[in-house]
Image (tube, rainbow, N blue to C red):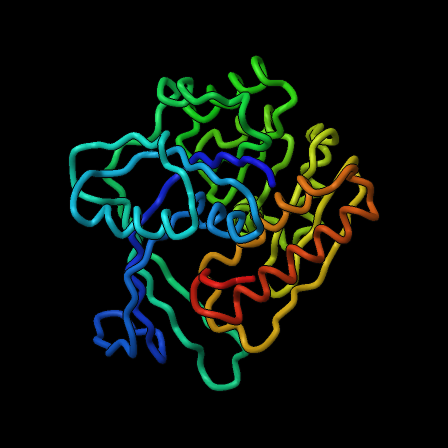
Amino acid sequence: MSKILAVGIATIDIINTVTHYPEEDSEVRATSQRIVRGGNATNTLTVLSQLGHQCFWAGTMANDINASIIEKKLAQYQINYDYVTVINGATNPSSYIIHCEGNEGKNKSSRSIVHYRDLSEYSFAEFQKIPLAEFDWIHFEGRNIEQVFLMQQYCKQHYPNLPISTEIEKNRSDIEKLYQYSDVLMFSRQFALAQNKDNAKEFLNSLNQIQLQDKLLSCTWAEQGACLMKQGEIISSKAFYQNKAIDTLAAGDTYNASLIHGLLSSDNWSPQTLQVILQTACQTAGKKCSQIGLDNLF
C-alpha cells in the first residue's frame, strides 16, 4: 500500500442519459438522471483507493449543503481531504453531462459535457503546508498552470525522489511548463488532436523531439487503446471492452489510476514490465466502460 496525493478538483456531476443526442434548439426526455461526485483528481483517487492505496486529495471545496455529496463519496472510499481549502460559497465546479446511450449499431456510448467553475483554484501557499515527505507519489491535474508549476518545482527541490505524474488533458495556455518537473506525463487524445496529431504514436514521437526522453510518456486513444514511450521506445496496447461500452465517463481517470498503481508496484520500468502495466491499464479502463460509474470496479 502506498500513500498517494492528488492535486486537482472535485465536481458535482449532473448526468442525464438520453437515447439520442438532441439537435440544436430542441427538447429531449432523459431516460435517467444521476447526481454524483466527479472531477479528474478525485476520480483517479477513487480507483486507487479500490486498488488498496491510501489516498489524499488537495483542492478547494465550498462549504454549502451540496458539498455533502462530495464529502460522502470521499468518505466511502476513505479519501482523506484534510489538505482541502474550504471556501465560503456555492458548490462548484459542476458538470452538466449528456450521456447518449448510442444509436443502433454502435458499440459504445458518448458523452458531452458543459463545465462551469466559479471557485478559486488551489494555491501554492496551501500546498506548502502539506507534509510531502509522508507520500510515495503525487499526481497533478494539468490545470491552474502557474500555481501547479510552483508546486512541482517545490517538490523536486525539497523531495527529489518523490515521483510526480501530471495529467495533460486540455490544451491550456502554457501547459507545456508542467512537463519540466514531471516524471510521468499522461496525455489525452483531446490534447494530441489539438496538436494536429492523428494517433498516439505520432503524437508521442513528436514529443520525443523536444527532449523528454528521461520521462515516461503516455497517450490514450479511446477505442484504439494507448501507448507508452520511454527513452524513445514506444509500447502499445489495444483497447479492451468486456461488452458494449455503456459509460466512458472517467475511463481516462481509471486508466491513469491503473498506470500509477502499476508503476508503484514495479521494481523497474523495463519495456517488458511497462507492456504488462499498459495492458492492465487498458483492461481496467475497458472494464470501467462496461459499467455505470466507478463503484465496485474491482
